[in-house]
Image (cartoon, rainbow, N blue to C red; front, side, top):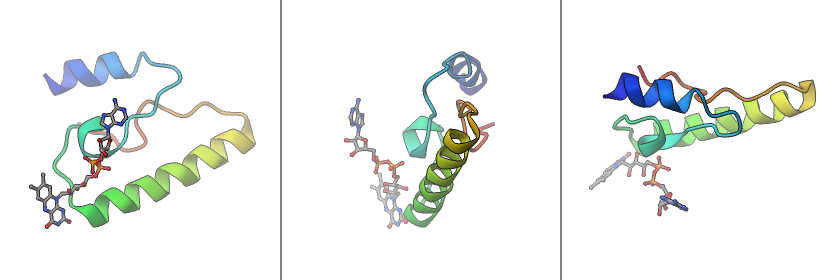
Length: 61
Ligand SMILES: Cc1cc2nc3c(=O)[nH]c(=O)nc-3n(C[C@H](O)[C@H](O)[C@H](O)COP(=O)(O)OP(=O)(O)OC[C@H]3O[C@@H](n4cnc5c(N)ncnc54)[C@H](O)[C@@H]3O)c2cc1C
């Protein structure tokens, strides 16, 4: 089910899925915050370099 969900999500061009629900994983708060900060940094880098953000900054599989 998760693989189907990831395949569908990767077709999205303007959405990056994050967090416990968005990546379909149990996460503690410290991990969630770390990943959110990393995703924000990746988003800023992508914006500066004119690149697209991927559907997942952290691979849920
Ligand atoms: C019962 C329980 C106990 C826990 N205890 C601990 C603990 O002791 N220590 C620990 O480190 N972690 C604990 N966790 C885990 C911690 O809560 C999660 O890791 C963390 O909250 C995940 O953060 P998140 O931002 O991914 O998701 P969430 O905190 O769930 O945030 C998602 C947000 O998105 C909002 N949202 C959802 N859909 C939409 C929508 N369509 N539009 C707008 N907003 C939307 C929701 O209202 C919510 O505010 C616990 C979790 C649970 C369920």
